[in-house]
Image 1 (cartoon, rainbow, N blue to C red):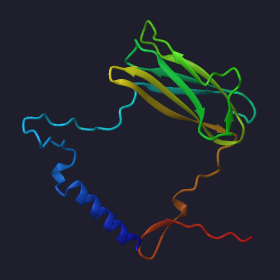
Image 2 (image 1 turned 180 degrees about the vertical axis):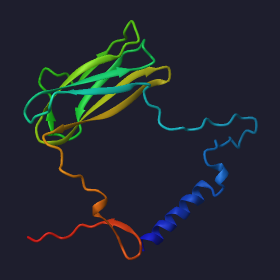
Image 3 (image 1 turned 30 degrees about the horizontal axis):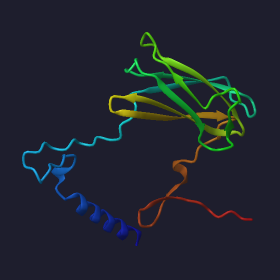
Image 4 (image 1 turned 90 degrees about the horizontal axis):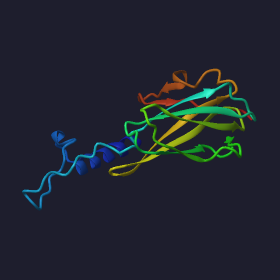
Length: 183
């Protein structure tokens, strides 16, 4: 039943998009005005022309502050960048009172990297994520780019679940075996 639903959904999608393989990626032309220029192609979402890099300073330990050096570069050196910080999971990390939730990085006289140090306090072990967003004004408006910075607190898992858990059913479909646990 699941495969038949997938086939029907795929057929509807192809019908809605058109079945001519050559039309994939083409830009539609305005039909009302024959002399109208073609509409611009949508390549994807616009993001800020910003690169974000980071370095975690030291070994993250539960309850202890850890510094993360964030470096930002952009070809638009004459514009300020607003950096915002947050944690991806409430309660996983906290910020010291002295750590602002956002900071404005002003333009530099040279094309050097702009940097900011962010301090977080891990509240539990595991892989935690600090989300850094960089927003800036461009000629077309405000654009933003975000990045999740993984912070491993404590020991990493011994072995990630992987291909050894994948099994093949009688019909050839692949899945993950999840045996029941006795209570």
